[in-house]
Length: 174
Image (cartoon, rainbow, N blue to C red):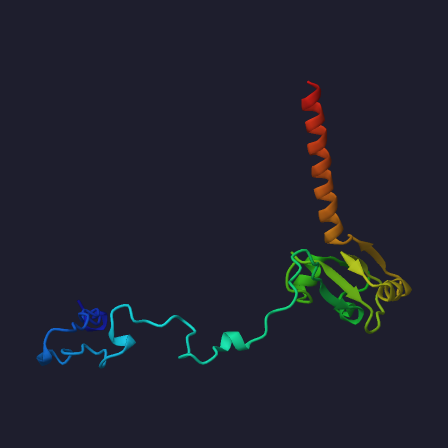
């Protein structure tokens, strides 16, 4: 055992005992003060209680509306941001993520038309605005639109429903 390997002793201080006589310093009222609600057993007030004053939570307005769980939230890019790629490059979500133009490959990407594009690029993303598409094609590039993730989701759900109906019909016939 070396001096540099010594450790502090762990905290072995025992919990303060109350109600064990005045000599302990925590006798008589046991740290609860004199009479009143908080001196009694179970005399706690509920969270948010402000002594009868209208609580803050009731003064705040109620939330209106709701957050749509199926809304498609795109990662937005502008045309001028694509200038970082070399002429004739293939621009995919993976390539965009490598250049740190988008945060994640998991979310859909939409390209908007702000700025100018001078390079010929082949772009594969979920959505492109009409003006951005014109600018990319004017520069000699190509666009492959993967389509909206929401419509894909609907197609998958509809296909599952159709398959389930077909199975039910086949089961009833046999």
